[in-house]
Image (tube, rainbow, N blue to C red; front, side, top):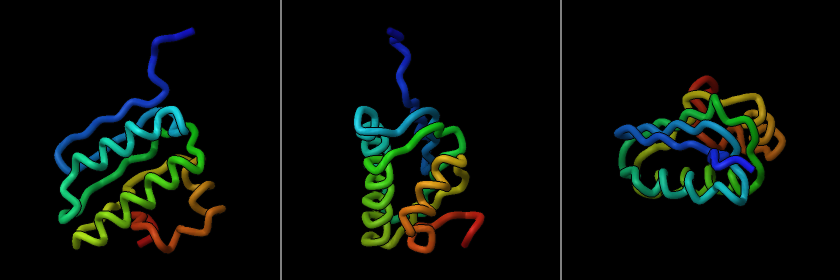
Amino acid sequence: MSDEPILRVDVDGDAVTLDGEVDASSVELLEDALAELDPSTMAALDLAAVSFIDSTGLRALLDGHQRFEAAGGALRIVAMSAPVERLIDIAGVTAYLHIAERD
């Protein structure tokens, strides 16, 4: 068994970059990273290196989006992998989230 985390999270100012798998065992890392950001600003979320995401990850994205919207800011997905795009499309929340290449 590897000690390597399944999800790496980098917070740099108002940007969060994820690398790995977002599921029930790792979603808290995403939630914590989003909680570090000021929701009254425009923040960037890079999901290009996410190899897997399940419904817990989607819920964290939606919760983050709602928190930013309520505070007058925006959580913008600036890049996403095929698995992320597929889940967002299947869930029918594409128009709800701020996705850079689709806005």
